[in-house]
Image 1: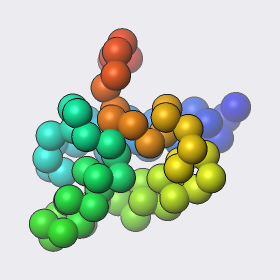
Image 2: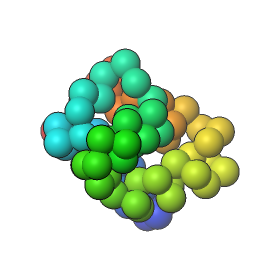
Image 3: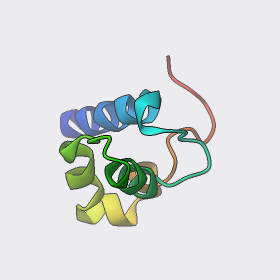
Image 4: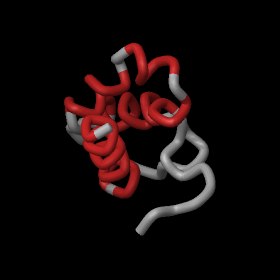
Length: 72
């Protein structure tokens, strides 16, 4: 559970960092790849998370960051 909270926190920080472009309506991996191609150096840790089994198969990790309620 602690690891899940850490992963969720890392992904949320990525979602909310506008340096990597808009995040609504785009899966996280697409956003990461777009930022990488643009030379924006998105966090490698986010890429690594998104390439885990859970990152590929679980929507809570792979889908766009804001899909309903927002925790602030």
